[in-house]
Image (cartoon, rainbow, N blue to C red):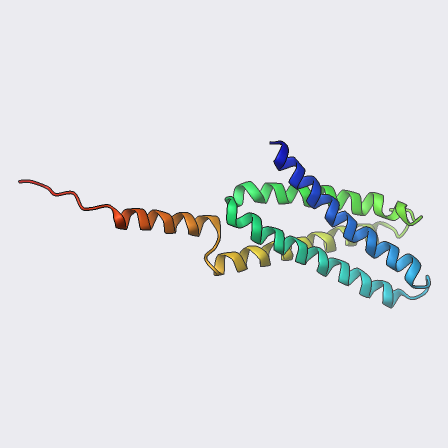
Length: 155
């Protein structure tokens, strides 16, 4: 159980770290009036978050069933989302609710969309390659049934 929570915590911290790096790049790399550059960095941040989750879903999906790793992934994304929305702005000296409710909720929806697409792409690629836990279990079952000799029935 401890290893499971450790993996969830590491993933949440990694996702939050991507956000912190993007916020610091926007804060110190560009002037405050350049919203186009800030939008490009934010889009890159969402792409990196999606890519990280796609890779994690690919590797976790090989070893465990979807129900097991899906709940872990949801917990990590939930913690990272809360940290990103509530703590992230404070690290660069902004108010989390300073942009208004629209900006606050848009940030949440964009984050959830990026994470959902990332997890979905990773798992779909894994399933298409036939390397997911269920496909491998079915493959082992088919091989086991094919190797057993047939029972002889006497009449």
